[in-house]
Length: 196
Picture 1: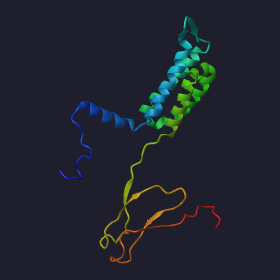
Picture 2 (picture 1 turned 90 degrees about the vertical axis):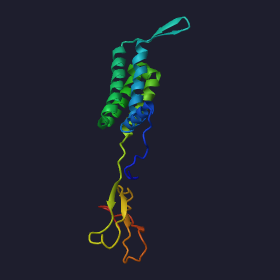
Picture 3 (picture 1 turned 30 degrees about the vertical axis):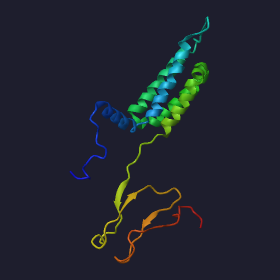
């Protein structure tokens, strides 16, 4: 076994830690917190129109004619939260849907579940829309064809182009005695329609 084939973090022997690490790996590949908040936001929107609250000896019933609307809004928010977990590709649709449902719950469901469901729904919609999976950096050989035998291959990490237009260009030495692997920065690249 070499250091290249060894595990970076060997798994512990006990089952709970192994289960926790698997859950963490699953959670990091999807918009977990946005989906969880969307499901939690659906609960007060769904609950308060059907609840009979007692304050002291007084029973307060919040049931209105919009009870069916509250039921639909609360269940849809929960379904969109679960959908974002198991289908991360539809996260933007789910985020927009949760945000619209949270705003519709203001007049329909007792001010959005007394503002609890409204605020949680707006935060969940924002989290679902803004989540994006991480991209793994690709390793690219930075040498010209034909010079591989003369100089060692310099490996660089390929990144997306900077929005300003700067690019990192590897410095090519004239002779083997020159300084190894220096980088110089070029100025902004001219865009189409730029006036100079």
